[in-house]
Image 1 (cartoon, helix red, strand yellow):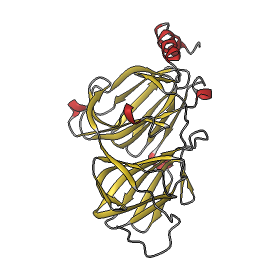
Image 2 (cartoon, one colour):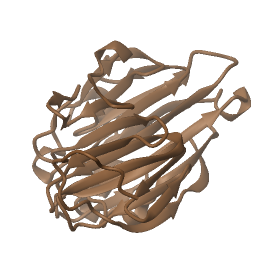
Image 3 (cartoon, one colour):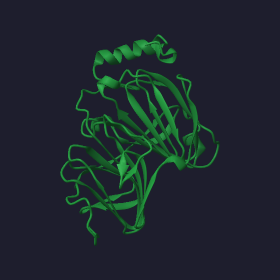
Image 4 (cartoon, one colour):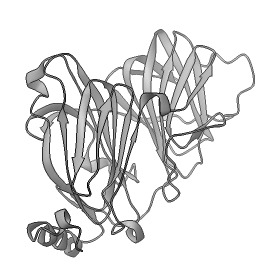
Length: 291
């Protein structure tokens, strides 16, 4: 369904290649979540490695949080819709992630961190994205940034608010920029029937995750709780909200086209590098940063 009455920058919108239903899972110390982007989609959606959605009003589903655990070779991006989570890591960083805020961590050569709820009741909801690093950057020093709600730039259109976490949209630069992957990460809120367009390079992989309401992408209706993998044909994406409105995540990025070797919390390019990551972790080098 195309409701455009004025010229849009996207002349040939991408179609939906397929719809994905996430898998119920748990992580950390038993936090219940939905794994939306699973390991079998990593090549298709390169440079994105994983997307988890979590959301519950029951404290037992999240209260144990994510105690100390290691990472190497990629970036984690946590976006909170509701709740409070405390981050601490072995590089000496700490911060409070709150509703509407973003935590962006580059694990690089290795870091041990924890993300623990700072609430014992109420709703905890949000997303964690894993974004790959190119081989040349996998052993860089770890980096961390808290982006508070007020620091996430927004673009406002007719019935649309786009919160630009990374990349750029409609001339609004996001809170974070990534040269290697040109990552685009937008939280788009649409009133009923409103439309939002985003130009995308044809070579960039892209997907949409609907977490409220429903949108139409061409002839395909995408309901809440579904991920739409976008075909790599066309010059962008056009989202048209259903009558009840919608809230969606739009992500796109330049594929790295490098081998992906993952085992648990480590993502490198070869099995040998994964084994070295475990050796370094067991030797205490990730905590000490003596690589």
